[in-house]
Image (cartoon, rainbow, N blue to C red; front, top):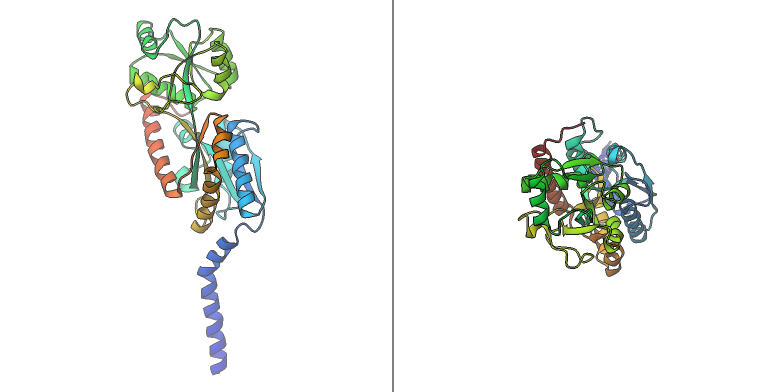
Length: 325
């Protein structure tokens, strides 16, 4: 009888030990099979390029396949919502830009709740923007533009690339900050909008620098300011918008996420591998050509950054009167 009790106790002890440490062992063994990295946009864009580079870093560092799966649509909502339903085991991850926190402010029906569904892993990049205007617009500075907009309320136009896009939100922040009335003209992408600005059909755009840079260099667009208060090395001599509009500082960003509930050791392991890769000089050089400043931080720092960004842009969206659709 005593022997049976000892066997039963030993079995119970093994079970109890397996419950708690078992998770740590699983995290230590992670990843033991291929991992999917969801990118909520089409192949070829900056979001896709960054997602694939992150997958490459993780595959090299962790010795397992990290496969990018593009799930575009609804401004990113389809892919983000898909990742939000994944198991919290680290085998379905997400690379997404800042629309992940903007979409809930502008869409009535959306398939995810950021706080409930995602665990931040690492901020990976800041996308630099500039204020560009048509070469025929009679302005040579931000001060000139503000004066013209106030003299012709509701007449000047800005191009945007969709509801809740940084292009729209940054323009609305400018209008609020300067007390100007500038009409939005929506487009399906930056290339057609920039073509129309160069042709004088639209007056301006708050646009990410890479697609605009060749037109700026060719004299087909005028760059009046960078939106980052720190300026941009690709546009030497172009002042920061904050020089004329104090406190204005805007960049889009890209980040890496896991499903909420993913064990902390797995998140920490992903973060450490990504940070090591993004600290390399070649990473900075690689993304500079995309107009992206490579970043790295801890999951806790990234979570705090997201909270600050969500509050900041949520207030702009509300003040601009942008209604969820």
